[in-house]
Amino acid sequence: MDPRREGVYLDYSATTPVAPQVLHAMQPYFSQTFGNAASLHTYGRDAAAALDEAHSVVGCALGARANEIVFTGCGTESDNLALRGVAFEARQRGKGNHILTTPVEHHAVEGTLQQLHELFDFDVELLPVDGCGRVDPDDVRRGIRSDTILVSVMLANNEVGTLQPVKEIGLVCHEHGVPFHSDAVQCPAYLPINVDELNVDLMALSSHKFYGPKGAGVLYLRDGTPFIPTLTGGGHERGRRPGTVNVAGAVATAEAIKYISAERYGQAARLRLLRDKLIAGITANVPDVRVSGHPSDRLPHHASFVFKGVDGETLLMALDVEGIAVSTGSACTSGDPEPSPVLVAMGIPRQWSLGGLRISLGYHTTEEEIDYVIDTLPRCVEQVRKASADF
Ligand SMILES: Cc1ncc(COP(=O)(O)O)c(C=O)c1O
Image (tube, rainbow, N blue to C red; front, top):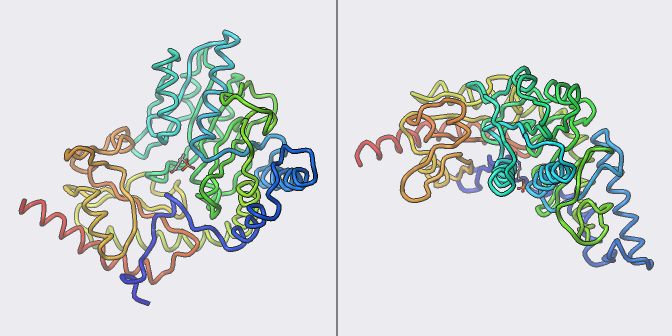
């Protein structure tokens, strides 16, 4: 195998390839069983039966009831519906105005809460995080007020892989009767997810992060959670997400969740070993590098680094030339590189935070690929550092 020629994909946190059995399961719903699941005739009823089954399979895999599963278009939409749905219900009932969250959330949460603040005057408060990006559940306890209507803390961070103490935070929220939302988009392929064990009331998932297709997401919405739909239209998904349902996407999501439920345990153990080998190889062979995020309480397939004095995007492109696909949290929008807000919130100084790199492994990652990265990356870092010193 020539990894450079064939390409080494190590960006599974960005997206995953659709598993063959998932593709096979969804295909009939484009052309054979193509009916609108809301139609009353046979075509519609066949599609509705497949949709019912998909609700049951996904619910069962998450320890939830079928009617608590809402199919959406993506993880971003699930987060949007969850946060606005709870906030607007509270506004409608005059219940309160205060929302607690973290400074390390994905844009899908961060942007929605920012809009709720700017346009609707919700009081959005950011909890402190430590140097690994973790929230302390005691800070949530101290932060909850009589007018708190929602807490949102992600299960695992997409950029640095850190796991949040979601179980404990959920417990605090429930003691105070506050709905708890968690963005779990990065997790299900690598961590078991049970909504009762995690104490979540609302949770976002995205099919394309667990070997399903793009354009399909899940919102878990616990029975009895105060919520109003913020998309308006028909009564699809029990009125919680109006719009003709993507039956093929729902069937695919159910098939993908079956697939990962069978693979997860073995893959997580295998990937943890490969990931640890990668971290050991990089930290031993590159000067001025640190692992970002929590050293042990992190997603098993996820490695992230900061390289001092390196521009993350330049390094990403140098690796791409070598056939290695990874990602960075920094963004160069107008010629002026911007450090990742997540790394800034974790207190990482600018000369390090501009050089963030995420290497996320997946079910198809091989040891040969990891060895190739350990061999290639130190050379790329040296090359990028030399080029910026010459510049
Ligand atoms: C933590 C997290 N939340 C939400 C999303 C958005 O998911 P989607 O791409 O399905 O909109 C992502 C995507 O990277 C993510 O990592």
